[in-house]
Image (spheres, rainbow, N blue to C red):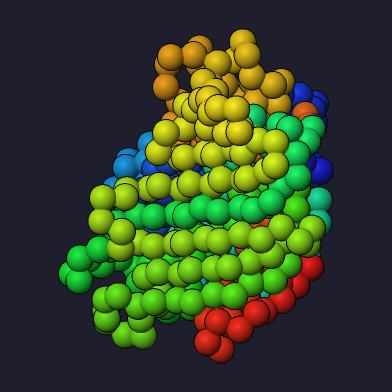
Length: 371
């Protein structure tokens, strides 16, 4: 197969709906999540590589047709339409750049890069490829419902934004992972890893942008090498003037993956909790309600992503599946779905992360986020 301007083409040159052929770099947790979403989107994992791990073992782990010893061999020999980059953060720029240069569409895990300059280079390299970053919380139906209600002004005057992203997988001093090594994970860990998700979500749901911020970072456990932050706290103001607060932690005992976002308004407030994604909290002065994820009653923007009937819980893998399915539709040239997070959104997240680090290093001084 060949790839021509975002459309998968058969060998005879006839353009039509074809099975997207995917390559995956990385066989860890995210590599397995990506591979499962490829299959659920009707694609096929035809190739993978996982660096130092045996290619045959890694290919079997994610269900790929064949393993390759390195990226060069994969790009030279495998017939793929899209490459899923699930390698350590420091390798994203090289891998995604090589794939784009080879004419391949790219799904690159976040952070897109560990520096603004590298992220800008990747955005410039995209050209006519589909290049996206998995800010997958955009694809929860109740996030789309919040976004739709805010867009029509149901909140009244938005007065403040608050939230957190809390995990506990690094709460013990002995907990370890490649992400704690700045040579692999980059200069920011907790914020780049999960705070970036929250910031993307607040900008996506409100249609507003974080303009300036004041941040503090905390290292709770001194691990090997140069430590990166376990906690970040951020005060921010949006371009509209709306103010907000955010707490990010990977050492919050009992919180497994709790992303919470609340947008407060004069007429209504909306709260989304990723650990309870079937409901959207709606607060009013006259009383509070919880909206159920029911495709019969949701807005059209949200109902599109309600994959199951009400009462049949959807979760993280489902929203990841929706993200990959929308991406593959774009790869086949069918459409560019509303809200598909592109490399430009990945660059935006890197810029916010660098603003957080600059502010924290200067004692929390107010720092502008580049437009």
